[in-house]
Image 1: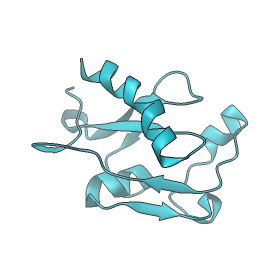
Image 2: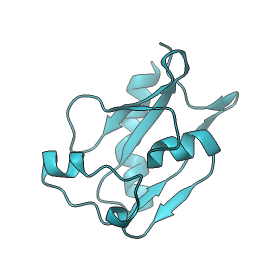
Image 3: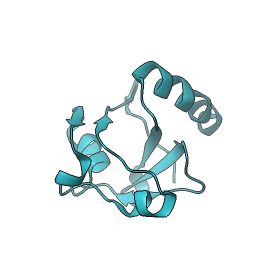
Image 4: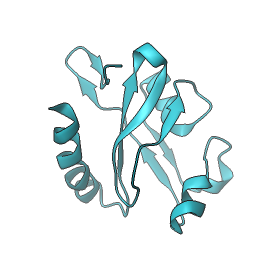
Length: 108
């Protein structure tokens, strides 16, 4: 299934991008939310509204890549996960992943 595939892709994408942590999100259109499918260093799911109030939401809404050099200086960055995990996010590269029919999505 798609969840398993995305879980397998997460370490590969992270390795190719040369990043310490990688998270793959999917849009849940029926609930207007974005949900983590796979996140290194995190157990459980993270759910955010489908809006431009967050970094991942901004990418989901615009379809454009965002590269932030100092995460803590961006008002869309939520440091709560860093506090929970003890990891300190320095920069963020957020890239949309497309299916043939649009942005990656998750059925509700």
